[in-house]
Image (tube, rainbow over all chains, first blue to last red; front, side, top):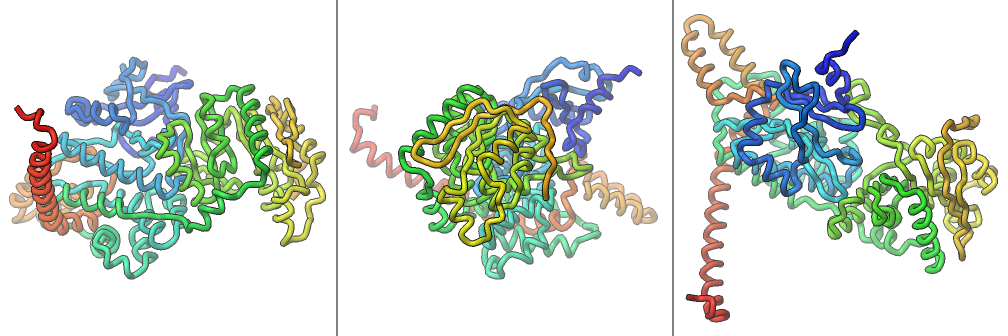
Length: 474
Length: 92
């Protein structure tokens, strides 16, 4: 049976792109397209005609696109097919640190203010509409804009408060780990929950009082009810609300305790010579692979990811400690990095596939494989810190990348000794021999080099075409 | 959009004597709010809160705007005064 272009574009539609009837994203081969339906024609023309698209895309705040010829354009009901700039890596709000979520919130408010100045408004304010090019946030949903009509409230106000203000307030006033609520609540943290969790003294803050506590109460009061006589929300009133939201967000801060910062600044397991040698060997391995996309697993402050980024790759660093990710992000921002992205990720429990039919948000594995993985000073954390047998560590890494630079840290190493100091050593299989045997089942070892002035060894490996499965132990 | 639904419901209820009134009200509302492409539910509570807060926010916004302009004016006159003494050559 012949498949029509429209059916084809619907078939190729991305799992997260189905709620908005104005259009959807679809992938055709390696290319990414956005279909704009006829019902969005006026809004799209206004976005372009008002100059808002040009203004926002030129200064990098909105993803640029090209209108392209595609078989889908000729189908009834389709107005345009756009080809947006393709981002190398899609991250999700529950993987961002506090600073990233705050900057994404401020970008959303800036865009809404700019939109109002051009006679448009944001129809939604989902945190998933923002992505990061390195440390620079960019708004990616071209179809979020609609015409603004004087008197209307901001239709996305609730969503903004749930996606941004509530988790930021919780992180800032309760505990930064509460940002993880965004993983459980994909449409943002429910305001009644945020209001209940926030300390009572936050009611003295006008921003929190209005946009979270009273907002939650108003939602409860009006649940399932109708407004008999809605009063228009004046344009100036709307600008006032946006400006107040902006000031509330700007005043939110989270700084990890100084001990955490200094711990990561001073912590090193190498002599100066060994550290330098390690950098040299990793650089050589990276140059040999010539990767376009590098994932640094257990990236810490991202020194090695940056090293790969400096050699032309786009690098993503994954680190489980939000304090370290925050510090790394702030450093990246200062440097204006646009090829290195630092994210929060616990590798023993990586981001799963989420949302409707598990298709809205991809798991970490689904976003791979990376051309090159860096797994430096990581194996002992997984094998000894998390009791993961080495064959399973190898299997996990084989599922994430094509090539691998990995460091084996033996039991004699100070770090491993420290980990074993408070527990029984049940890791009889944790040796360099077992490590090599486990990894040779999934990878070919291309190079192996002992780091001078240390007991550690670096390997460059390439994933086998058909991995041989070893029997996993539990 | 919830508001449209609200009005549709109001329309159904006032089918008798209030028919003309409701129809006029509905028409007025549709003219006021033509955001038919909105697909995110704004939530009635969020709508009401914005209605209540808008007045105060507008006043605050105007005051801030006024204050900002006033500061700018002072800044300008101050920089003008210092500019004259520092770089007299720039003044025609």
